[in-house]
Image (cartoon, rainbow, N blue to C red; front, side, top):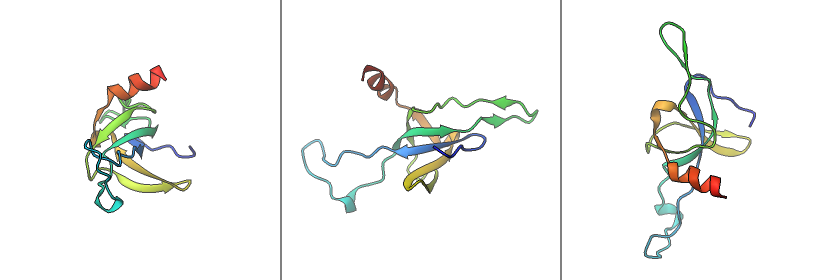
Length: 104
């Protein structure tokens, strides 16, 4: 990826939601909401304190995260739609995604 976010920002790729409900009903594109789940593609170095000390981010490349519906700024890099957001916009890391990736 030819892009590195600055400071406490992260670059996230949305993970598309299922196209069917649990009951098997197919959801048309017009009724779908944008996913609030994504994979971290790149991270900045971290935030700086008032004293100038670097505080590294808790988020790592490859983490599967949940974020708010209106979080981040949509950008297109190398033809791919991505989100840039601050680490504080991320609600949490999905631990099950990590375990599944390790098993694969």
